[in-house]
Amino acid sequence: MHHFAYRGGVLHAEDVSLDAIASEVGTPFYCYSTATLTRHYKVFAEAFSSADALVCYSIKANSNIAVLKTLGNLGSGMDVVSEGELRRARAAGVAPEKIVFSGVGKTRDEMTYALKEGIYAFNVESEAELAALNDVACQAGVSARVAYRVNPDIDPKTHKKISTGKAEDKFGVPYDRARGLYREAANLPGINPCGIHMHIGSQITKLEPFGDAFALLRELAGQLMQDGLTLEFINFGGGLGVPYKADDPVPPHPDEYAAIVLAAAKDLNVKLLFEPGRMIAANAGILVTRVLYTKTGAAQSFTIVDAAMNDLIRPTLYEAWHDIIPVEERLVDTPGHLTDVVGPVCETGDYLALARKLPDYSSGDLMAILTAGAYGAAQSSTYNTRPLIPEVLVNGADYGVIRPRPSYDEMLGRDTLPDWL
Ligand SMILES: *Cc1c(COP(=O)(O)O)cnc(C)c1O
Image (tube, rainbow, N blue to C red):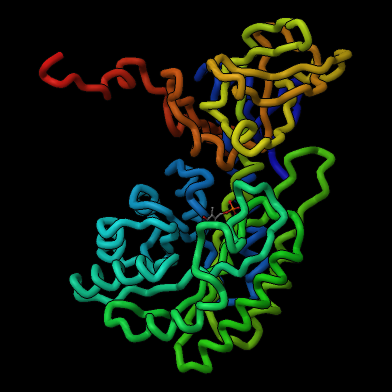
């Protein structure tokens, strides 16, 4: 469900024409819909309205401060994976007691900063990291609230680059060792092991892997309570998938997911935490790009557009599919043909779609790459010295540029010359 639709023959984001935004800010650009972000957050949060729950939006999916503030104003907490993301959450006005800190490689400096801010909890991924956190906390004279991230060795049946809960993945501590690790953690003066965390992967479109994983969480919670631990929360991670193709099977509704979670947490009397990223942001954003040229190669038709892999790397990195539609509705009815949609970057891997049946675009036409609100702008780079593209947030009939396109002077000005040059 999203708020991008044709009105009077032109694709709109809520009440704003994308053609109008393109004229004002230039192409390519990302455009996000406030109504869609809000709807997704609410559908998820409301699925847990009967429980003591905290939804911590996973910032890495889309970290623009205006997006964070939109969600923060609805009551969302945040899941961060770096000091930079923690600073973004704080800049968006999110209270520290609604922030959790994930990631396999937090540095001592990052830990110190997060303890000073007073975040809700750290998701710790190894004994070595726990020892470092214990040191840092003791030095600061505080106790760090911790959940071990437990790796259940479950195949989430998603792309291999976004599976995180299999034994061979770098994430978490092995399920079989978790009970012993908690016993040891309880003896560390700077550590308060008061939660359990699990996040088995992303773009998960079936409920079974969640069900299997959450059954193990419940079992571990019971064991830890038997061992005398005061368990305050269970963090179920993120990972709920979204439809990328119009004819994709619909991923599980948050209500179905909630039923599994609530069964796993029944009578445990703990706070429930969640870290959804993609399901909040993906469908709330599109990438608008302009066709530069079309050409027919020896074997292939190419549609060359002004966006590229540095702006949206998901097709290249994850072999991801994004639906592509024209901004001008009249193109929908052209005969169409098979084409590769490629960008200007000097890499064969620079494409947004391969052998895709699309309408007949000409130079100057605008296309919208859908479901680009998560892991789009956040993963973009300046490869080929291409400026990061602007981000625009629409809210009803209003829109604002929430990250302007940098000038070439700003880009080049970041390089400095040593004194011998
Ligand atoms: C990336 C990540 C998430 C969010 O995953 P989505 O699939 O976007 O919901 C949640 N928790 C952790 C620890 C992550 O690394």
